[in-house]
Length: 231
Image (cartoon, rainbow, N blue to C red):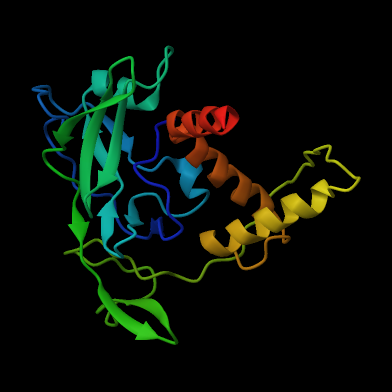
């Protein structure tokens, strides 16, 4: 599984047809043809949402599929030996390639070409950003030939996802561990856009996103932990 270019509650899947394929590998300095399709945000990150396009934190919509050569596809997806490449979202809507150099990540430069990005209209609605599209002429399920936007069609609800229980032992003395964890999960649930942190698999999704962020920033995390121990 590749490292996510960015982790943000505004990043979510958007309906649309499969983006046009790029002919050449976009990694800086690579002269190979694009041989394999790569999801910038992995299917496991989007968790059942549409996968061809994603909404970025800027509220633009970006193609989530790019062609990479087989070597660089293996680097970013983490073959045995770990991740050797990381496509990151930086400087607004710019995708930049970083390469592992044994001590961390070295920036090589922006992808060329960049993933296709479509700007969206923004309106203020009850204090929140509302995304609107000028596709009122489309019928449910119909796709725009120009931008690939598909007007959502009515769907029958999917079967409820099977669940299992993962227990955690917590202190139950002067420090009530369950209350501490509940408070943190509820705070992150608000930041990540989960309306009810105790409903269904919401707790799991909160913990999974936080753990994913910690894993991608584990170098900084370890430095902070070591520094706190030296105080």
